[in-house]
Image (cartoon, rainbow, N blue to C red):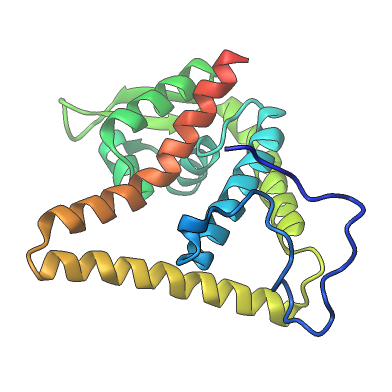
Length: 210
């Protein structure tokens, strides 16, 4: 699908329209997606945020998703890989690759678990702590980029709306499990859990190919 970007010379949206309504999409919206305008808007927003995150994180030696793993390690201390999978709602294979790449970059290391001889703990290195402030600055910058022009009230309303959308999907996945729709619930939960990890993995792979 051919993708377009907003044109710099475009005029403002019709002032009579609600904020953001009627503005040109950053990629073509296919007719088949006309029944899901909110879903397509989420797709576009996630795509653009991932692009900017990739650009900013690459400058400090990370790829999207890796910084979230580091955030958990900085905040909670050493974790088993299974704990990171749970915290990130990821999967074991993706987390193994992410941790390996962070280890190769010198940001984490493994050490034997004092309570489980079969497991190892993943902990942030001293070098990684110097990275924490830069990661925080990246996220602050991404927040500013995403919410430019919004008042405090609009930011709060946007956050509440996104949280409601998230809860709707969490509830739908849970109801699928409750009604015995195991395949549907597993698919929904798996898609939700793997979305961020898959995006990070894709970004990392893309970075390696550059």
